[in-house]
Amino acid sequence: MSNSSFISDFLLLALADTRQLQLLHFCLLLAISLAALLGNGLIISAVACGHHLHTPMFFFLLNLALADLGCICTTVPKAMHNSLRNTRNISYTGCASQLFIFLFFISAEFSLLTVMCYDRYMSICKPLHHGTLLGSRACAHMAAAAWASAFLHALMHTANTFSLPLCHGNALGQFFCEIPPILKLSCSKSYLRELGLLAVSAFLVFGCFVFIVFSFVQIFRVVLRIPSEQGQHKAFSTCLPHLAVVSLFVSTALLAYLKPPSMSSPSLDLALSVLYSVVPPALNSLIYSLRNQELKAVVGD
Image (cartoon, rainbow, N blue to C red; front, side, top):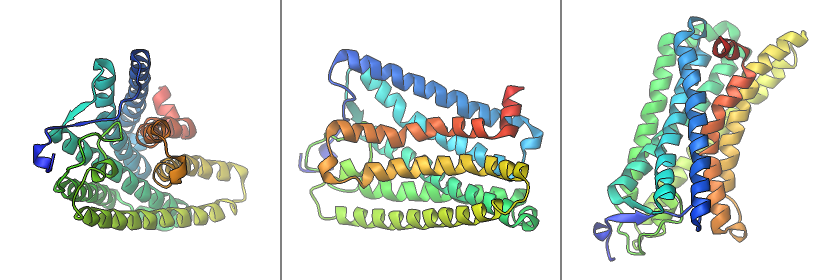
């Protein structure tokens, strides 16, 4: 194949070699999907129906739950289908669509985590300005900006990646369509353009991460100065779930992309890809539900 125009489909990485393991992986993915649908669905329903939860924190949490559902529903169903049917194929159009949608939701998730961090910082460190700077209109604008920037980010990377000529086969070393495995199939130096875009995106993500770390340092400094133990506990109950979600999201992605080449192996790469693309969206709702008393009360009712 000398050009991507001759590629009608791609071959995804198989989750297992034996039929028994394929069926086991199908059951595990089904359980994870159902857990994610149930957990995020409960959060969406609780925030939508609980009038006392109509606050900036829970508004952004609702948006995060939508992004988590999008991530899970983009990658897992195709992997389940391939495991059940013992196939590896995904069409060229399907691969492009999956890449775009996954990038859209994963970018929106990180943007929303950054915005939520700003909300927690203002709520705890600048409580007198919180209501003024984070009114309903401001929250809607911030959420819209997060989704719009994610859309532009996904569109830019998808269009650039699938404009590359591909001549190194059609086998992707990943269980879903992602940029690095597609770049390995390119036979043109124009892939350097996409690497440049990835570097810019990495720089922006690093900037957001530095902002999140700085915000939490300030938050902990303020919380530890609260005289009452009950006040500290209440503040920590709203911050620690967010810190846990951010840590899970960032650590799994860094582990997958920045591990030493000597550690690379098909089985390890597959496990890490599942770890950062499937596990965080499935666990986020559980983390928030277990630590947030207001949310637990509504879900319990």
